[in-house]
Image (tube, rainbow, N blue to C red):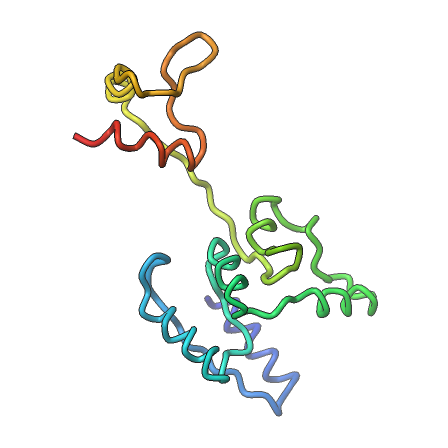
Length: 160
């Protein structure tokens, strides 16, 4: 946050006619009353100019028409020869894909994270004993889910 506050102060210094107001929104991605607040502001015609949002939520907001595409701004930076112009090559592919919806850029990734899954080998082997278990390696050994879809379709086998 200190870096963002410093950037905000520099922006205000460079643009004294613009006042930046920061509203910090906390919550989780699945149920967040502040998301309702944001949507009401957008629907009411008083949207924020800039939003710092979780990468994985960008597509759903863009699908609602809540966010403006950044393509024109990015193109303008490239035409002006800005050496810091945004390009997909500056970001991890997975992060960039979350910033794009239907071929248009709606966000600039500001962070990344590592997502891993741990599993209990004995529970996996027990779950694989169920005739509906479908995940096996090339040697016929049970394997854990490797994708979110596999996790969704097989998580029921781990519930006692």
